[in-house]
Image 1 (cartoon, helix red, strand yellow):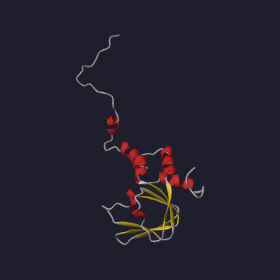
Image 2 (image 1 turned 90 degrees about the vertical axis):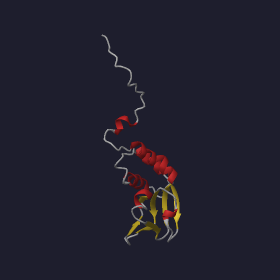
Image 3 (image 1 turned 60 degrees about the horizontal axis):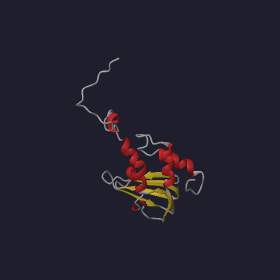
Image 4 (image 1 turned 120 degrees about the horizontal axis):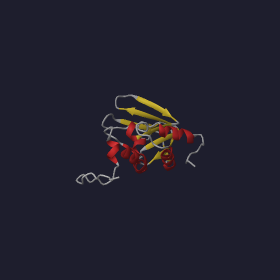
Length: 154
């Protein structure tokens, strides 16, 4: 059972996890999405508090409204149900972002450690920089190049 107030959020949470920007680059199994959803815990944020002061990796807004303030004075407002992750919405090298609770906000959050141990590991193992890299990336078979090829006599 997912740690949710309303059963209606279960499908929405799993769909939201599947829609994260990096999920389509590297297919993440439904079983892993379910595992991630089960690791998420409930956290409350009072009005005018910054969600980014919390070290969590993923935030799923289940109640309330948040405001994403960018350094170029652009503002986005999102209400339930909205999912965002630190890596996609808060990249300090590209843009300065602040994510504030407008009113009382309830979120399901995934800790940075749980993110690293689930999605992070999967992304790391499946990252491919060259189209043929996957062929040798996990090949642990010992290769003995100095031995001449053997001929089979039939």
